[in-house]
Length: 233
Ligand code: FPP
Image 1 (tube, rainbow, N blue to C red):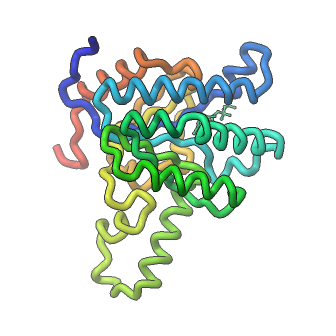
Image 2: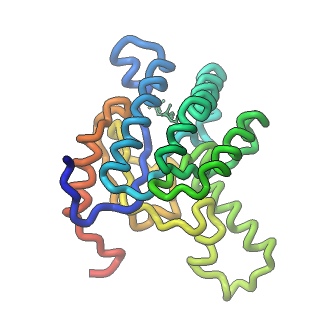
Image 3: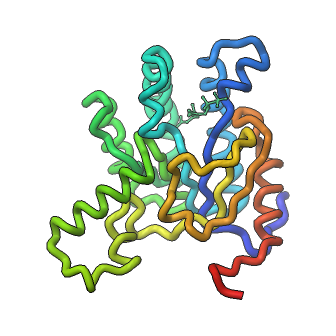
């Protein structure tokens, strides 16, 4: 039985990095790393529910990831589509609400339809909200928000932080309390750049396929010891 943490974060976001290096270390193709990363995601979702996390946001594919070789991009698309086909039923039975943050426009129409259907199916679930950042970029998100605010004709003096937040993909959701990045890179990589303004960061050298429940628990423990000041004292 995992003891309940004092001061547990409600919203945890993860930059799942290091699949490629995990594979290389084992002399395997990068695709094997993505497969292992996908298997790990399942375990981490289960662990998140057990640890009392209410919202989990994962960075699955960025607007910059299109620059990878076509083989790898196509491989990732197939993996994501297969995951929906294979896991949706169980996610739904376990009370997971799926949301997408990012744009669906570069996905194949069949894949985009699957994503929409998964969101519709799970919309009333309440145990865990799983935001999948897919074809997501933080700057693109802010640009889109600005465009829709301008298009709505709002007078400049009425535009506040709340106005911007209400036009982001994450509208209506609380900001992440904790952002975890695996594989040791010390950068934000265009992820939740508005929403993460006051998030705590936890960076571990562990590659994503090896980031297990124990490591998630350690990240939450460290978070619970931090004193968040939001710019105050
Ligand atoms: C980082 O490894 C991971 C990605 C680019 C995203 C792919 C994530 C998965 C396959 C996990 C499963 C997610 C879903 C939604 C099914 P990298 O390729 O950047 O690794 P490297 O930096 O070591 O090369």
